[in-house]
Image (cartoon, rainbow, N blue to C red; front, side):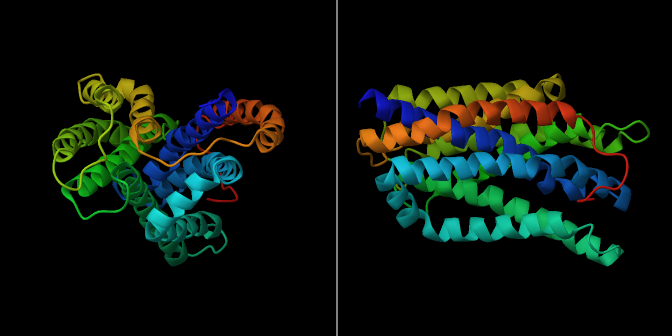
Length: 310
């Protein structure tokens, strides 16, 4: 593989992993809303915590799709052909979740807000599950009805929930009400144990029919070991304090696993196309990184008053 193709592959992996880490926060917290928010006020604070992040995290996914379409059309065709039903459901769930966030504050009625909250929760769970099916499908060379597919989907879904719990433990701390943050912090340990158990079961199921396409042992084992270590650290007594970092590392692993171990079609990146795309991306990526850090620091706590979304 030439230098341009290698750099472009690394960029695509970075964008996908970046989206998983960042979107895992708002998608995961949306999944856990019924558990961490018991009343209208707490649900509003959850939405206020999600709102600054979901558009910014989607930028990374849009950028990843653009890079794949522009530089890796063979890979794009493969992904769409193999995962068409999953992608269709993922897109529909994405729209439902975003509609719930955008429309929640448009009508000041309890029933309307409750319906929008339900859309956020249902959409978040479906998006997380579809990501799990997508990872399983890419690792196995296509969607298969197998134990590995079920367990891989469970692992990725649990990782989204874990990332959301860690995010909620940090972002839902308020001057007068920290109950939601405490609930989110407490749930990090059972979620990490669930994900760890499912990871072990998925590793065993990988040896059965319908498992992943064989890959070099080191490439396949290294990400699994990193994931297991991160989840083991989160499941201990100090897990809630570590979860901010360990959950981010854990949810990055499925993307890295696909990039490192999946048998994906590839073709050399045309030099002219590659240089054109990179000329656009080089000044853009630092802006994305700086903007994400700035947004993260600016919105350390949910807004106390009414906002556009909540």
